[in-house]
Image (tube, rainbow, N blue to C red; front, side, top):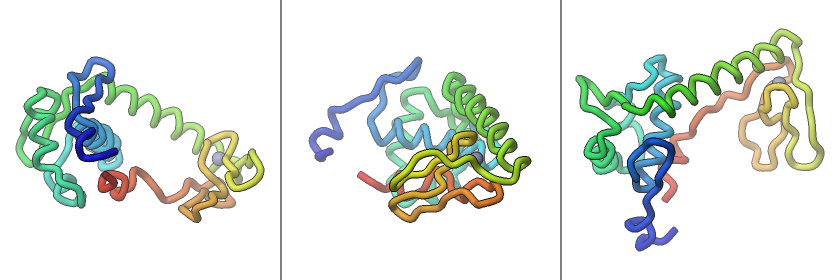
Length: 152
Ligand SMILES: [Zn+2]
């Protein structure tokens, strides 16, 4: 994506107001991260400061759009649709991950560069050498990577 495109491209997703690509990405990653931190729907200033990408303007855009509301130490996310979607996804994937852990192994599917567990969908072999699930049903040690937010 060129610099010119970036100012023109807005994303309209669900009930959200139109957002720039960086704002939409930050919004989505921040919601997922908020679950991992045990504070669903709250984006802390610490999290924003830890991201290598520029977040001040992006957070301001989300606040202006009424999607994020300023609170002590961070932002409260007003997007029940995405939050409940992430919650549902996490509950389902937690249940699937539990099946693999209880069984003690993943169920490999595929051949070639990518092997994925049929039950919990974690990669068991990746062509890029990134983290994969363990032999005894463990999930790989990964989540939204901070690098992903940095890529522009
Ligand atoms: Zn599995």
